[in-house]
Length: 73
Image 1: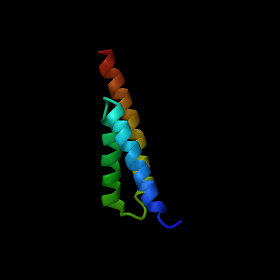
Image 2: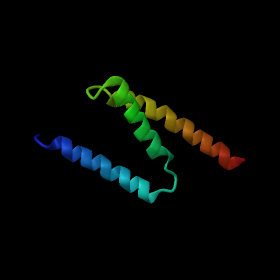
Image 3: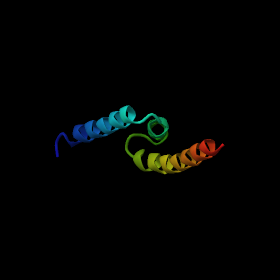
Image 4: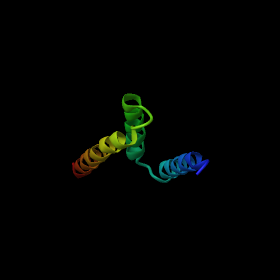
C-alpha cells in the first residue's frame, strides 16, 4: 500500500478541480474546503475526517435550503 496516500490525495484534488470548473455554483466546494481546514486545525491530522464530514453535511443542507429560498423570492 505504499504510495496510496498520494493517489487518494490526487484523486480528491482532481475531483475538486473538475467540480470547480464544471459548475458555476462554487458554494459546495468552498464549504467542503473550509470545513475540512477547520476540522484539521481543531482535531489534528489523525482524526479530522469524521468531524469534517459531520460539519459539511449540515452546512450543505442549510446552503441548499437557502439557495432554494433565494430562487423563490
